[in-house]
Image 1 (spheres, rainbow, N blue to C red):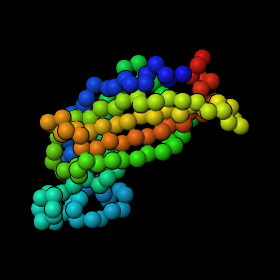
Image 2: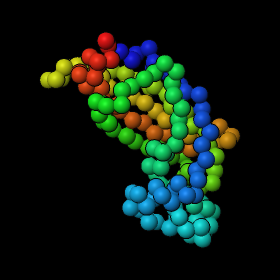
Image 3: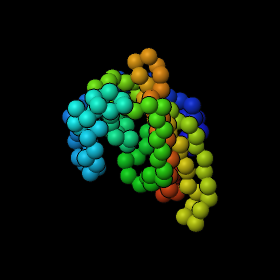
Length: 149
C-alpha cells in the first residue's frame, strides 16, 4: 500500500528552538528541571545554555512527503523512539525533515494491518545530525480498506 513511498523525504524545514515554546512544553509535561527554563542554570551546565526536553522534537515541523497522505483518524501510534547525538539547544535554528523508512503488513484477527515506519531528523546549520526520531504507525484493516477505495 505504501511501498512506493519508502525512501522518500520531505523538503527540509527551518525550525527555531524558542525559549517560550520550550518553557511551555516543559510545563505541559510536568518537568520543572531548571536546565530547560532557568537561564542561569543553563549557563552553569555542561552545555553552556538551556536545552529542550528529549521529546520536544514532536512539536517541530518536518515538512510533508509529496503525495503522501494519511487519514487524521483511525491510526494507532505503535512506537516512538528518540536518539540524540547532542542536546537540542534553546535558541538554535535547525533543519528538519521526515523520511518514510519502511512499510510492511501483518495478518491479524481483525484483518491485515499495515506498519509504517517514519523517521524524523533534525540537523544543525552545518548539516550535522542532532537527533533522530522513529515512529511506527499502525494502519488497521478498516483504515486500509478506506484508503484503498
